[in-house]
Every structure is written in structure tokens, then in C-alpha cells.
Image (cartoon, rainbow, N blue to C red; front, side, top):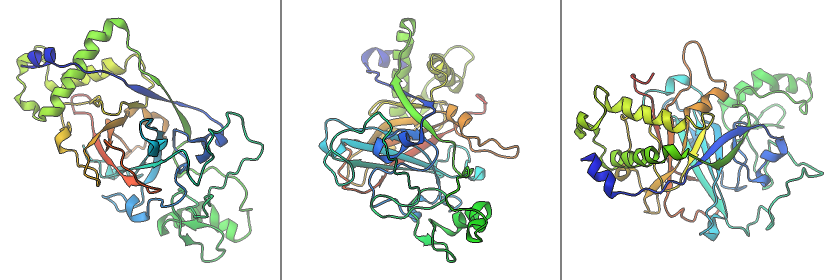
Length: 357
């Protein structure tokens, strides 16, 4: 059945891969429209930031922390001249239970070329003479959490010079640094490493290139994945369609390994309207089950976060750690007009099967 299906279907692959590189801090500020991992969010819209309730982990109810952002404009729509997707995740390892994505949040923000926050012309590639880098206040005047860089409306009751998004983050910063600042033991302007945040990297992209000898395998892989996504019932695929003595799951995992072998350092795969590269035959999302956008339009696959990113986040612990097989992001197919707001999109977490571990 699968072979007949594959002969009739043609999938165009247009995947862009993401890799990590070091960058100067000014290159990762909002006015540079960066794609990046870690550090604080480089907010696009300077107003209407996600609120604390929107950022809470649905499992432990603690605030999620900025993981990465992807600059992904859509040339067909004026409203999407600037467009960024922001992903947040919980820092509590216990929340990362198998195939459960409730510890992640994703938001979409977009602006037309003519907007009230940024110049019409693109930013210069040269370092500006004066770098305005204030991690605590946006250009709009909104105050940010001193620890995580999200909306901060709770000020220190003693000095009123710093703000936080929540009591938990205020407590962490008090113990790590602000207690000494309030006592005038250290200068508030002194720079210290914020170990609470993930390490900061620039996320650079380039088109995926497959060796010519892999083209046939590449097409078959995508077609097979589409078949799985549309049926969402892998138990109905008979084992004779797989290699002898191999399970469905090991087959999918083998395809995953073969596909990423050419670029093993990739941390992200982007292909809006395409198909994810699943790591397992278990917990595969059926496109028909993807929740629709609040505007009524369907959501489609946009990009996925690869497990290789974990190697750069410094999250390993002896007892437990943050982990995933892949994290898949689905966004509004119409990229509906948001004004200056940040709109929640849909995220799906898939873990490796026991056979692949």
C-alpha cells in the first residue's frame, strides 16, 4: 500500500537548516532582527508583550524561560515584513515527561515595514557608534524582568531600581546579586554572568543540501513521513512494508539519522508548509488534529528544534535534565494580522522511543 501511495505523490523539499555561531552582543539586539538562541528575548514589537500567565509552564506553573527566536518574514504579506517566532521552555527537568509539550510556549509577532518601532531601511552590518543596550527597559518604556527579560511589573520594594516578572525570579536575583546591590556592596552597573539564562548564540541559516546519491532516499523519506502524518495510525502499516525484522520505530529513527548525517550540527530545520523530520513512529501528530488558529485558519508546520541544541544549553544534571527528541512548531497558515501583539501558536514535543535511546 505504501509503495503505491509513494508513486502517486510528489513532495517538494525546501528545508533551511539552523546552526549556532558566536556573535557580538549588539548583533543580537532587537533592531538587528536576529535569529538567536539563549540570553534574553530580542523583542520585535515593543508593546503588548506576553503576560506572566501566558508564559507559565502548564505543569509546574513557574515562568518559562526564553529558548530561541527565529526571524521568518513572509514576502507575500506586507504585514509580515518583519516576523519572529519566540520559543520559551520550562527550566524544571521534572516537567519534561515523555511526549508532553506542556512545558513549552511559542509566540508569533509580526510588523509591516512601516511601523512605529524601527526605521524603514534595514540595519547596518557595521557596529553602531552608540549601542543602546538596556536589558531592563524597552524603547517604548515597558519595564522588563531583570532576570529573564520578559515583561517586568514587580519592582524591588527597597530600591525600586529593578523590576521582575514574578516573585520567583526576584528571589533568584536577590540571592545571586541584588542583595549586595541593595546594600551598596556592589555597583548595579557591574556586569556579572546571568547563569539563569541559556547561553546566547546567533542562529544562522543555510539551505539544506543533500548528496545526489541521497535524492531518491530523500524523496522516499518525505513521502513516507507524509503518509504517517495523514493517517496517524501507524499500527495499520504492515511489517512487510518495512525491512525484515525491523520495527516501524527503528525504521523511522534510521531515516532520521541518515537525513541529519550530512549536517550533524544542525539545531533547527525550517520549512513552512512542509513536513517535520520525526525521530520516532510514536506520538506523530496528525495534521488534522492540529488546533486551528484563533482566526479560524489551520495551522501548518513551520520549523522544528533538533536534539543537537541540547548540547549547547548546559542543562545536563546527574539526577534529571531537560530533554527532547524534537520540538515541532505549527503556525497560522495565513499568518493572520496581529497588530503589535504576540499570538500563541502550537507546539508538539516528540521524544525518542526506548529503542532509539
